[in-house]
Image 1 (cartoon, rainbow, N blue to C red):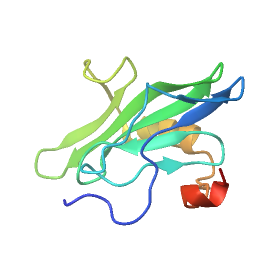
Image 2: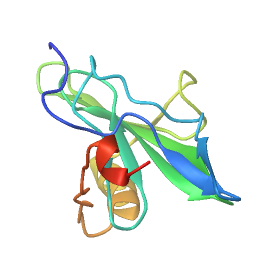
Image 3: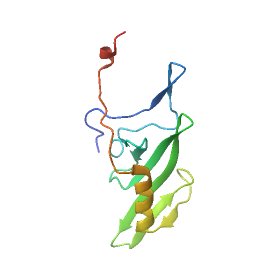
Image 4: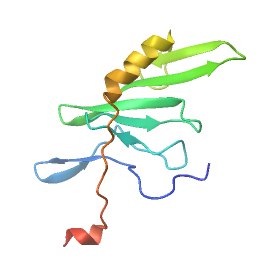
Length: 128
């Protein structure tokens, strides 16, 4: 994959006391996977591999964007492998779950699936 085409979200900032603060718990790599999605329920979904079968969810807690969980759809007819849920952090052992549990967790974070359409502007349009 050559990276994303067009404009997409790569970092998240919040405003604290009138100052933009980078949320260091999150960043997107434009060379991996699909661009992240921001759902209207406030959940951020980051894709972590090239076939979009591994993704992490982030949500705001007390004004900071925090990693919540990772889901991995590793189903393969040939290998008869299942679905995995990673709740204890990236890089730690995953807990095997059923397809139904996978879909429940996905629904919990994605809600009705409505994605925020960001109104992108050039920095120069914000004045200065």
